[in-house]
Amino acid sequence: MKANYSVRFEVEVRAATPEQAATIARDIMLDPTAQISVDVFPMEYVEAADEWFPTEKHGWYASFDGSVHPDNCFAWERLE
Image (cartoon, rainbow, N blue to C red; front, side, top):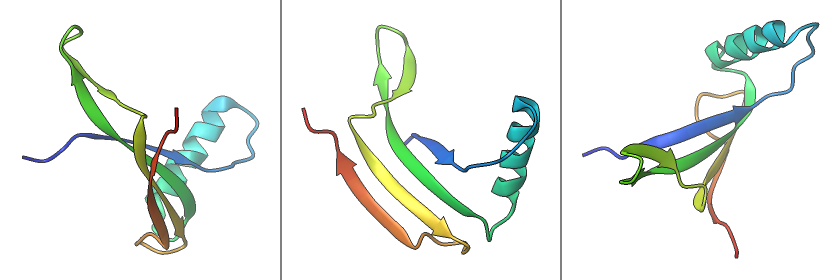
């Protein structure tokens, strides 16, 4: 069985409106040569809510520097 993940990416864009910024970010995701940073969080099932949520206690970071494969990827764990 495959695991569930929440994936968040970060790009900086210049735009006149939030809608335009969202459109630019979407277009960047369609470009396999774009430079982006990605945070990946494993999902965990919360029985009380009957829903899956990203744990954010640990995860992975990856960066793409203009290629279709990550040029940097590492696991991390939040220190408490």
